[in-house]
Image (cartoon, rainbow, N blue to C red; front, side, top):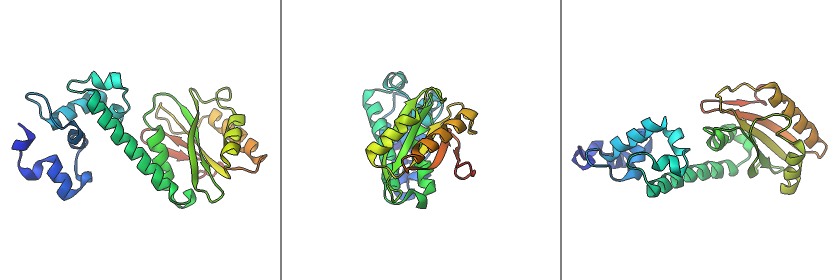
Amino acid sequence: MRILDWPEAERPRERLLHQGARALSDAELVALFVGQGLPGCNAVELARRWLDNSGGLRAMLRQDRAEFTSLAGAGVARYVLLQAALELGRRYCHEELCRRSVLDSPSAVAQYLHVELAGETREHFGCLFLDTQHQVIAWRVLFSGTLDAAAVYPRVVVEQALKLGAGSIILAHNHPSGQCQPSQADRNITQRIVDALALVDIRVLDHVIITDAQTLSFAERGWL
């Protein structure tokens, strides 16, 4: 059945206008970008198929162009729309984080880092560089691949911190495995970076581990 044939109160657009975007399911939200479905398959049904075939919303949005456009009814135009929506969400989170000291908004820090790192299939190690008021200067992914002493170089972190004029930093990396506990390599590289930055009077405020479902803060656990 076409969405236009649904009762008005059940249509995604009207529901969003009257109940707000949070009232809509993932499929209904995606359908608003899809616009039209296929013969015998309306936009909500088509969006639901994409989500099912991709393994959920995050997995679908993380697909590259070739993967996404291989889905039935998907195309470059719809890929562009969804990627633009994803980037708007990322920039919204970043702007929210930049509006105040990160010490006043640990939840905003976790949300932003989750948007940046969750769902990645490889490990990425990055830093939030902060000024002396603990406001964000920049986010940088510095290393990609397996996190160990050979892959993460404290010297590079120090160089970037000095270049950006940072007063403190927050370290972050993801665990694609879904295991949120730090490895011994995580602990070792954290201490090496803490020691290296201490020589130039830059403090490490936290090291956050990100998985699809969780975040773990070294600072909250008393490990820094």
